[in-house]
Image (cartoon, rainbow, N blue to C red):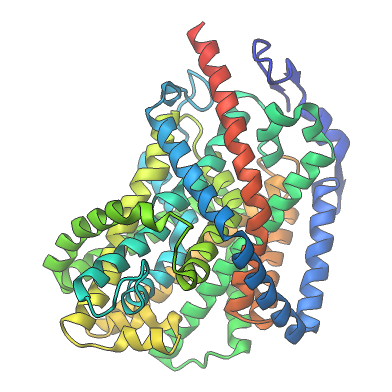
Length: 528
């Protein structure tokens, strides 16, 4: 395998032979084809982490609680400002002359249908999170509105709650994913470099990306992906088991959580072995159909008029309040540290995984098409989802006096919020069962997609790493989720995501410069 770089681009080498990097640095043994030292360092640290966390759960819990407080208190400004940079940068690229550049060259064409592509983008990007927070968050913000809004001012509190929710699930997270995905796709498909995070930094580091600076970047990407994914898997396990308890009386014990994570990790492993087309793509499409069916049913069976008008009202509230919500100065610290900083760190920790997965399935798209579909379309879908599920819960609370979801917030049982919202609707048992299935399949698609991405990074950019290697990382994703769940629950999962997101925020800011440099050189070549 080799990639050729155009000689007119002074920011990149004239030629780059990936056989050198992959052949000399890779080690083949026991059915693995691994990049040295990224694989061995990552695997060793993760194995030690799992062992220590399981052996000393009380110490681990205390450590992660202190770590989260330290990071959110001292670096909240960095997360907020970085998120703003990503949004402005990606919106600029959409309207810039770079928009017509095609990923893979002038003759490249998409490998997947438009609907299949969108399904994979959305399932990988936010599936479990929307299921977990789609009902909970609007109600939580309504009860304790940000921006110092009084909860007694019901209409203003409702508008602010929806704006704050969409702020966390709209342009900012998808801009983070877009920066990573577009950078990887461009430098891989247009420059012939390996599909690894280090390749993006060639304009900045030159040949040093193949030395220790590149090893550090890729190793950070592995950690960020694994811990960000473990956080989502923990949320998914909590919600799926809560649904089973709600419907079938299955006890929500630690043992059952471990069994559930193990079973779903097994399903994800089978999907990973099946590959991108037969496994991940098929599951993503099934999940999109189920999610759409549940969405439509709630719109029809719920407060239809309020949902439809609420969609436009929520968009207007989001547009009106996005600037004060994005300002790190003078913010409510409980909201800033408890919600926004965690979310931004979580999205950033997910970005190597989601970005690389998006890059893998986006060859042949133009920069403008890529950014519109990765940034604008998912944001609108997120607004519709939050308006439908969270808006329905707010109508139930404000107009009907139904306290079901509000109780899950006050008692902090977030995993029950979705099922409590569905309770007053017709066919609640069937809807709750569909919700459980959706969580599980989103769980599987996140795990198998993440495994493919970590495989690619730890094999030096190979798109089809050995099956044994795919199984190894799929299993360890489950083990990390189990270790964090037993070593402190959701608090430890959130702290791990925040800790790994911090250094990677700096990596992403450097990535913006490198992407701009590469696109500018490409534009000059096409205009010559």
